[in-house]
Length: 408
Image (tube, rainbow, N blue to C red; front, side, top):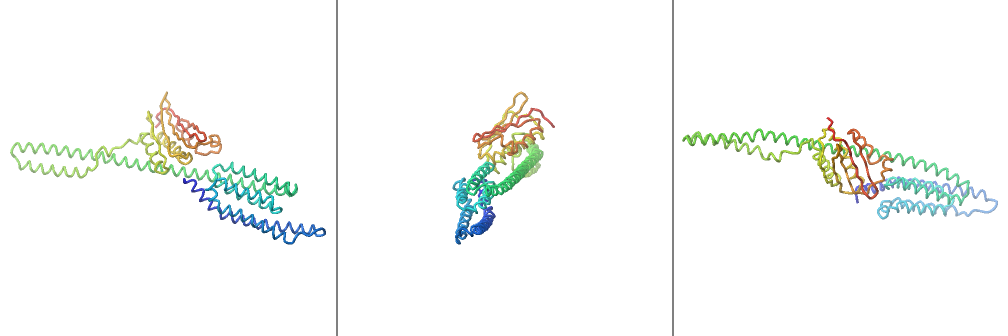
């Protein structure tokens, strides 16, 4: 089970308490409406026929049983979603259809009251919540049509007015919830970008420190070795001249110098030197490493010719790649991605490719999801453009196209 599914199950368990309390209130209202309607019916039929005295008690028991059965589906919502996703909404819908035909005067309360309950579960659980909301609304309108045929136009119209009011509230809540999700997603993306930027700064600091140490070793260790060579040459000269005492003294100094140099140089110059900062492949290596560590997304780099861009340009390109890979990790449902580049006629193209589930590009652009607007704005600052090609179950390709022009 991935992180998204686990979060959905956690959300279902969190919301079932308030939903059960709401269903208990709906049950009390349904019993009250049923009691009032039976009292009115007794008064209206007093001179003709008596309504059975136990009718209210039996109908109330049936209402209680109906409410308890719907509460049971709410209590086991996580289990139903795990077994079959459609059961989360399909099972209570089937029960509500039965109760609409059998509860009589109490059915409008059950019909109108259970609509927001199912909608809340659908909004917080299903990925295509708008589609599920439309289906549920259509089915509820069908059940209202059945109730309309049973009770006539007067009560049917009154019930429809209440139902339309509840629909308006639910869809307003859905739009508010979607905006909250979009804001949360934006904050998560900013946090991820900040975390990656921190990793890049940390890596840059490490590279800078390595280069500093390499320079110090070059200025000290190699000079010490040169000094040792000169001292040994001098000692050799003294030995040839028969001055062994001075030669021994110089050799002792050379040994001390050599020991100190070896003590101060445990790493070689090759190990200390690293790739320069002003290098797009090096930056992308840092990004892909951080993405792999945080999201378990393995990215293959196949870069050919890369223009000599300025640090500010490299920063924007890196952020575009970071955002695109983050989208792949969160939405594409794949653990593999590919980055390629090509250069032709003063135009540089960088492609981020995945073979995941893909998405409907028109709906994504319309709803503002996947950060497409942010990618375009970053590309425009580079005098470039972002093109996205995607289809359901066929993966996604994000292409950054920009001129080969260095801007300081």
